[in-house]
Image (tube, rainbow, N blue to C red; front, top):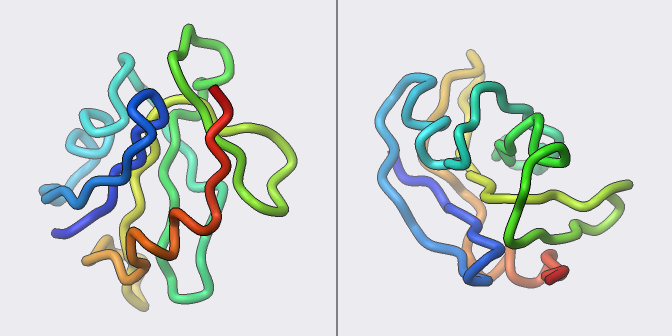
Length: 105
């Protein structure tokens, strides 16, 4: 399925192909991610997956998201979801994400 990978180290957003399942999400987030959270959900059903322990790990980049109370560190992955909660192609565009993100370092 099509997703968007946010790489705050490079300050890029890249369209990626992600296979179904948990391991491809862990792999996309990188940095030895073993648990993730979806703290931000767009009105269109897209969710932002982040390393749930990202604040406790050495990171080379981060970003702030509007109306979110703390910075998000490390990579993030945006995937869509259907009515049953299954992951599907992302609906949000790179341009929409770039308007919302403030790179931190």
